[in-house]
Image 1 (tube, rainbow, N blue to C red):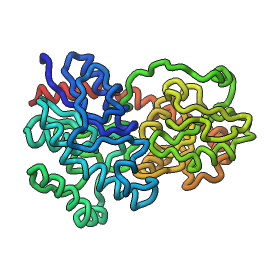
Image 2 (cartoon, helix red, strand yellow):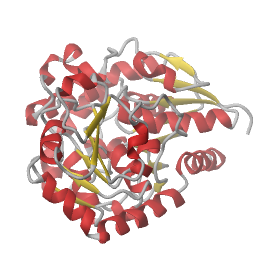
Image 3 (cartoon, one colour):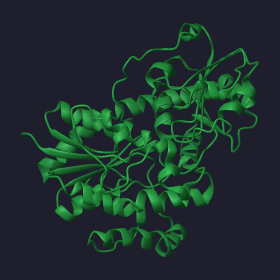
Image 4 (tube, helix red, strand yellow):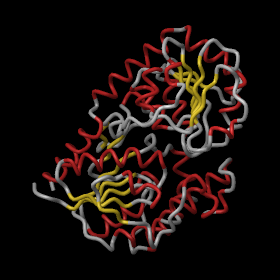
Length: 385
């Protein structure tokens, strides 16, 4: 097909960048000219791509979101969630579109929450592909009524800023009508996917072997419990410290990752706990027996791909929906609060059905094809157009 200018847009959140960078890498590998539209913090993740910075849209550090968007505060609760949508996602959308329209592109592949890139494709009448970086959404009748009163108005004001006509459906209206690439697999979904959906498993770039902690050999021959809150909700009191306290005298070796905060912020560690800021999941999870998580979609899919069952204590935003999906699928136990974690971990360790189910789902994720399949589907769309 020759070289194409493909714009790959990702909100500058770590959980979004992982999926979008994987697609970008594969498109670059196939000889396309990729323009990566993302924040400065994550430009290095899009190797081989031309970087298009956030300029009209206010760039931000996802680890300190409230510095740019004060209304988000500590990121907890309904008000913070609403501020996240209003100020970060919708509030920057028109300016994102302005950034994107300052370059040339033949196709847009966009994180489903990078609304500006989708609107730019619509304005330029070029094909566009949505990548769902979180579980799929679908409005039920009551939610649709609420959406009509609140969300649709907010989204349509954003559309009006760039000269587009209104649409109903809020988030669903920003799914490409031609191709929606969904992480995971159909069996994990609790909503009916739109007809243009194609499940591609897990979108992740190949792991690079980084410097591993000096205690890494201690994992040999041990039962390992991994505790993570991902990279967005990093307050240690939410899950990390409760898990350390609950498992402090457990026979397992407990590996805690902070998601970027210095490991020292955890304070004194029990004798069976080891901590690091970050360890690639593709290196750690094959050596893990149970993962305790707040329900980040990327981390959950990583655990499933590795066949690791989970205890999920849902955090903010979409994480309750993630917990519902993976627990209903039989690969996890959910705790609404970080209590009785030791009991939950022992249950997962002692009942083989959780690990067996995780392994089965992991086989399905691998079979879905990942970034290579995503790039194939993008190519098929281009041929159709």
